[in-house]
Image (cartoon, rainbow, N blue to C red; front, side):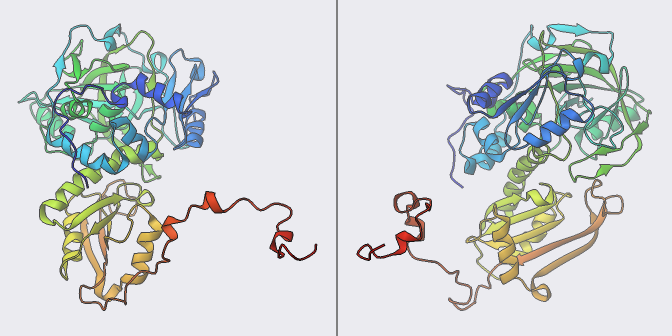
Length: 477
């Protein structure tokens, strides 16, 4: 992967994804923004239309359900769009994300942020915000694109992540907290009998949205990674009711507290594996205030759609690539396949140098993140971004008795319905060519000159006279 110039200094021209409204302008100019007529139903219809446009165009819903605040969706529903937002070529996305994660830029606090132009201390979530219901059996309206920002109670270092948030009352949200940094912070305050201050940011710029999904050690503030992606310090502001700092240019901010020793029913909800996360007793946020711009937009991510999958997948790829290269210099590229919901199926491309290397890479990958369920390792002549190529490598270079790695009773994703509460089996396929194989045994077929053919110069669509054109020109017709 090519190296990139440092972006730790202030960028002369900010990437197009540094501003949400600038990004929407960019999509509009390239005919990738669809404006939906007023009155779309917040229950299912917003999600239905967003899903139909998924990967082709972002959607902007005017007065959804009669609400004055518009809804936007599908901002990052294509891999190449993420590259555009960063201002790099598609092949450089993982390197750019790695660089930002390794070279964060501290944020800069401002006093008069646009995200606090309007302040509501009397809160009614469904009345004040256009919160959609997405899937058929969802338990109700959900905030799905909110960046939940929490703060280490000892150090003050923040964490940014996305959690599904069920509207459970006028000022109450049910939250699914998986075993990550937010939960670690909360467990510390709960042991002391205290609530954890939080903020939920809705409508952040694309680069900050991507940075929220960085997989970094605890006490690494993802807003500083966002700054590195911007090429300059991210402007933040302190919430009006707590000590959390939020992006100053955000559209909407919900301020509140994760309540100690409080659990309430949450779910079901349509999740990224494209099944429903079950109903259970989960954590609760009590909302203290809502702030927003004078004319805000509400961002929603449809559960299981491309935006949902890619937003979590690409930062994981960058993290996994760095993790594997530390131990295996032969690793060239990694890809979390769409068919594996951008979480469970990892393809790894290597320059194989010795026997057994493929199996070691499999073991390293399975240890890199508990979500990884199946790993396929292939040679450098296989395009891991083409599922047909990967399947071809498995079909022609893999033998189960020799090349299969199987591990039972390991930690996996709790959202994978085939596991036993997250405990299941993992599998690796070493689909690489043996080092000592005869030269012609695994040599791929190739037609010389095929890649140089210019079809536009030598061909045209057949017309009605195609049969006559087969006859020699000297033969009478």
